[in-house]
Image 1 (cartoon, rainbow, N blue to C red):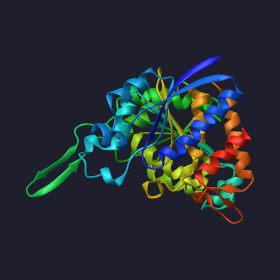
Image 2 (cartoon, rainbow, N blue to C red; image 1 turned 60 degrees about the vertical axis):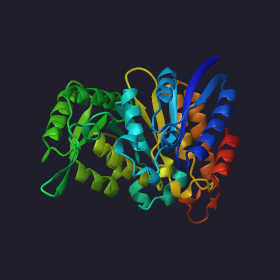
Image 3 (tube, rainbow, N blue to C red; image 1 turned 30 degrees about the horizontal axis):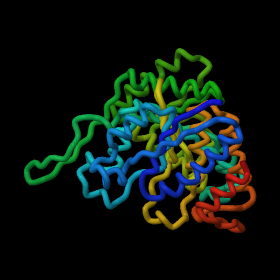
Image 4 (cartoon, rainbow, N blue to C red; image 1 turned 90 degrees about the vertical axis):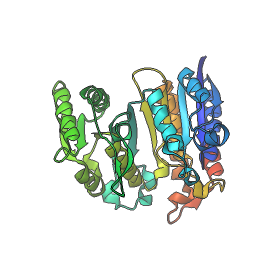
Length: 357
């Protein structure tokens, strides 16, 4: 029997509610497919700040590095916005990515037939959408130095640095190539090379690397046009390759093609060691504790963990199938409510998914 050690970071806001659903799913699925999972929960984000004064305690880092995979719910709350940036929950997430060397973020966007009416876009625009955003995760403007806010001549000035080394661009491009090889072999690299030197290096480097793979078709698109095209004609995209900042924005935009940001999972990976699997959505403190959260993105992140992180593909496919069955029966959390749907709570959605496994 295969045995796995998982670290669970429930984090803040709705994290505890959606984590409970995934823990119950893992219990059911591991029993069905005959593998053993040990789940170690560690403090992370605002809850860690409350107890230790920092968002990412040393014990959490240690546990994550020693695990087979890390499952994260969500972090953040406006009540921490007054803290120094270095100790805010979101800074802890950036540090965790750096500590685990998670340079590649993979965000699949697939329209499920049962939810096609939940999207704000017309059916003919989104039907058949199946794309993946490959986002560089440990470089760019979120990590660049110098950065800060200074005061000069009675006026404040804020500044950040967007920089990339060619080696950073190379390794994320190679990830996109491997994904594209298993799909339609089309990569759209998104940048802003018309005004940013760092984007020109990105474009030149991506072209040089992909030229070594003649089976891959490369196109380039400026980020503002890419945002427009994702809304206008999203079916043209297969694999989108982009930097940290642009990927952050475009992947959230892509999430709403599905009708709710509560539907999308993601994986953050490196060349070795444990990956981090998390939903795209935030901590939604406005509905925390009300049993209204959508647990599906967390459940799908759990499936991604099983498939990519633990090589338990059959179990992962079973979870996705169970989710599709529940949705096809008309059950929805409030964020997905549409005409004729049956609105249920977070916990009830979890129970119905588990019953279909």
